[in-house]
Image (cartoon, each protein chain N blue to C red):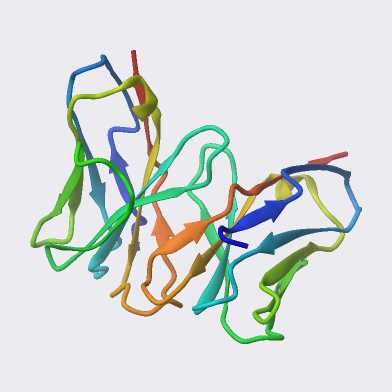
Length: 111
Length: 115
């Protein structure tokens, strides 16, 4: 993996469904993995910063895990709600503080 | 605490013109980064300023430049605009921005359309 890649590109789920998406990144010179939620017409909002292999973070119904050896992170949303509809971005920092982002996963939650 | 603000929110320019975008970071934040988002692309890093100095730079042509003032406010300038410069330009601030774990706080962006 040379760049940060996110899958799927978009996702459409029903209210109450649980869902997850993937962020893959170069594992060499890895320092931190950032997750953001970006709602339409708003600013991207920081969700998690993760650094250690095996790290797991949780915020309400949203959680994330990190595998730095194989270079991936999963974001999980339990019991999706319409207000979870947003684009979820992951970004990786290496030796510098510069963030390299994936193209995001667009989540649509319908009633 | 007020968030990151960007002005203007929308801008329409024609090819060949130049444009200046402004970003006011969160009070106390000294690092300001700029990103470009075009359809189908992730956020592409333009540059980062800290204490009025450019500290990091992305892979963009020299037409893209920036500066930071003593109050940490930052401006980004694009000269000789091209159609492909149409994008959402986001700025983000962080306290020091020296650690890879530092959270960056984003503004709402400036939507630039080049005709």
